[in-house]
Image (cartoon, rainbow, N blue to C red; front, side, top):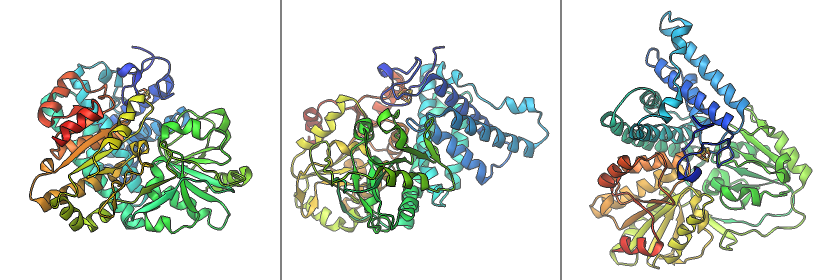
Amino acid sequence: MSQMFCFQCEQTAKGVGCQGACGVCGKQADTAEMQDELTGALIGLAKAANDAEPTTEIHRVMIEGLFTTITNVSFDNDAIKKQIEKTEKAITDLVSRCNDHSSQYHKNYHYNMNELWTADEDIRSLKSLILFGLRGMAAYAYHALMLGYTDEEVNQFFYKGMRAVGQGGDAGTLLPLVLETGQVNLKCMALLDKANTETYGTPVPAKVSMTIEKGPFIVVSGHDLYDLYLLLEQTKDKGINIYTHSEMLPAHGYPKLKAYPHLKGQFGTAWQNQQKEFDGIPAPILFTTNCLMPVKGSYHDRVFTTEVVAYPEMVHIDEKKDFTPVIEKALELGGYPEDKRMTGINGGETVTTGFARGTVLSVADKVIDAVKAGAIKHFFLVGGCDGAKPGRNYYTDFVKQTPKDTVILTLACGKYRFNDLDIGEIGGLPRIMDMGQCNDAYSAIQVAVALAEAFGCGVNDLPLSLVLSWYEQKAVCILLTLLALGIKNIYLGPTLPAFVSPNVLNILVKEFNIAPISTPEEDLKKMLG
Ligand code: SF4
C-alpha cells in the first residue's frame, strides 16, 4: 500500500488517486490515514447502532465525523483524533447498552478502510458513491442541526449506508443503495431549506457589491448561516463590516441576515482563488466550513476556524461561539485605508443572488407565459463546485455562448466563473439567476418540478439542460439525488470522478444518459437540438 490513498475529489492526482506523501489539496498522508481511521470507526458506530438505538448525541457524532472527512475541511490531526475518541466513546455507549459484550467484541466493530481501497473496482466504486454521498449529506444535516432541525429518516440512513460500506455486497444490493443515498439526500436538503427559510426568511433578490469599504472588516467563508448570524450579532455597533466569501454569498438574500447594515458585500471569488485573494489582507477570515486551502504565510495570523473546520496552529472558535478573537483581530488590522474596488473574474463589480424557489415560483405565471410565447426558449442549470483546473473555463464560455432567449439558473461556487457577467434580462428578470448554495439544488429541483407540472410533462421533457461542475462530496450527493429522481441527460465536468469504474459509468450512461462535457459549442448544439 502506498503512503496514502484518497480519490474522493475532482482534483485527485492524475485523475486516479492521491497516493504520495501529500494530496493535491495539501492533505498530508498521516492526516489521510487518520481520516480513514475515523471513517473505519464510524462504520463501527453504524454496526453498533444495529444492536442499540443511537441517541441524538450519537447522531451528532456520526454527522460531525463524516463532515470532518470532506475535502478541504480538516487538516488538523489533533482535531481528527478527538473525533475518533468521540466515536469510540459512542460505540462503547451503544455496546454497553445492548448486552455484556467484551472489549474485544467492541474492537471488532472497527473497519479497516484498506479493505475498501483494495476491493474489486466495481464494488469499490459503488461503495465510494455511497460513502462520499453520505459525507456530503452529513454537511447538510449538520447545518440543519445547528438551527435545531433534524430528521430521523435522514439520521438512520447514515447508519444503514455506513454499514453497507463496511460489509460484503454485490452490485445488485449496492446499486439500489446508491440511489437511496440520493433519495434520502433530497429529504436532507429539504430539511436544510426549511431550517434556513424558517430561521432567516425566504430569500429575495439582492445585488451585492464587491467593493470593500474602508475600515475594519471580517471575511466569512463557508456555508454555515448560523455562524454568520452570530458574528453579525456580536459585531453590531462595533464599526466592523462583514463580507461574505465564496459559498456564503447567498446569505445576502435572506431577509433576517440582510437586515444587518454592516453585512456589506462580497469579498473575492471562489474558494480556489483564496491564497491569491487573501494575500496580505488587512482583516481576519473566518472559515465556517470548507473549502479551506493550506494557509500562506502572508495571512497565517488572521485565519480563524470554527465547527469541524480545523487547521494546525489556527485559532479555533469553539462551541461557545465567542468570536472575540476574530473581532479583536479585525480592529487590530484596521482594514483598508480607502475603499478598495474588487471585481469578479470577468471584471464585474457587483453580483446578484437570492433567486431561490420562493422568488422564481412567485413569478411562475410570467415565466410560463414567456415560454409559451417563445420569449424563453430554454433553461440551463449551470451549477456545482468550482475548482482550479483550466478546463473549468468551459462554464464561463458556455454561459457567454447561450442564446439571448435562454435563462441560466445557477447555484454553488461554480457560478463565480460567470456571475459577474451582464448578459441581459428577459421580461424584467435577469438571464442569470443565482439560486444559492450547493444545497439549494433543492430549490432548483422544486422549480423544475413546478414547471413540469405547469406544462403537464416530466422534468426530462422540459426545455431544460443540466450542466454541472463537481469538485467535492456535496456535489456527489446532489448528483445522486438528481439520478434518484430519474433526471437524465446531465452533462458533468470538468472530468468524471476517478471513483466511478468503467462498468459503473456504463450503467450511469445506459440508465441516465449522463455525459462528460465536451466543448460549449458542441454541447449547446446537442442541448438546443
Ligand atoms: Fe487528493 Fe482530493 Fe483526497 Fe485531497 S481530497 S487527498 S486532493 S483526492
